[in-house]
Image 1 (cartoon, rainbow, N blue to C red):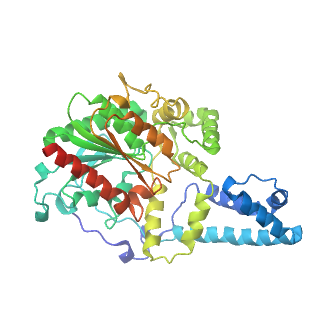
Image 2: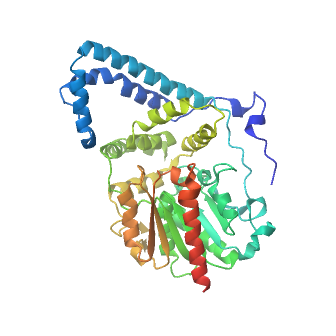
Image 3: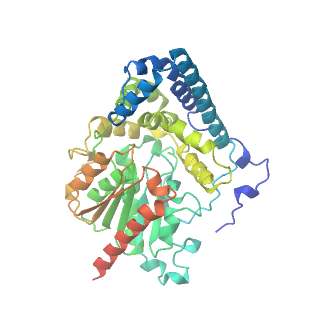
Length: 439
């Protein structure tokens, strides 16, 4: 393990103190917040005439507010709304500026590489100082530790599961007598730029699973997160006759891609279809374009979170945690063109996984045929993978245990309460499985 200098100890002229370019794409975040707050005064007359759409749970509250505001001149009300909107927008800008100038930078030494295929690496947290076989308190050698492969999404970097040394899902499992291995897809290289979903499954994920099972002398447990869960289901289907996967856990994994889709997300998909030729010429889908999709799922999220962050002290633990996650959100590589095409066509447009029509090479992916123990964890506040999308997978898996947790898509794996709401229950499920297996 190489020593790492804490970011707070770095001299002021190092890259860690330079302001960030994000949140990405920055102009869109600013324009979105500006439109949100500056449209308030223009919308006020419509509100007073009950001409705006109101959430059903807020109709009585809105009616009471209109009744109260009827005692004031519309011009005075609009002036007050403009002033409040300007202040809210300034609060947003202050939060963005505080984030861009935060001194925090992720300074984490990488674990050993278990195996490498192209630009894809499998990182081994089960050895050395990560809590593995060299720790005498573990009471187990590396060879006897159950191997667990964590498979993240292709879109954002893998280190959301190893956010920093004081808050890391991987290090937590490494200290629990399990050998966690994190699949890091990496930036697409010359070969990977031609990949679709099929190649990432058959030429990267499947060989790595075989490699781990052979070298560790026992089947692995797969833990797939988000899109990584969907790909893990495909790999499990392909390898079902080889006895190299003993169980599978799926965290916030989409399966019904038409479930609870918002009007904004459908509009985004239509925009992607109409601009398809443009990014075909580019040869990949830019990360900033992917960010448009996430923004469309909750257009007010960016404004809310940066105004809240702007009220925090820079060295506050919550502020540092916010910056760590936000850096991850704005990190990532472009998607290979075929991957983007496959996701758009097979998943979001044709919804093939739900109807058992998704093909990976010659394999038809059918979750109902996966007869090993499985766990599906569904975050109740997930906007990226709606509840019913993940529940559709749980209903198809024949030996499935389901857990619903009070969290969002990202906070479930790396939020401040992730240890108690996800890491511990996931570890307990694994321990129960190992104990039952040894009986």
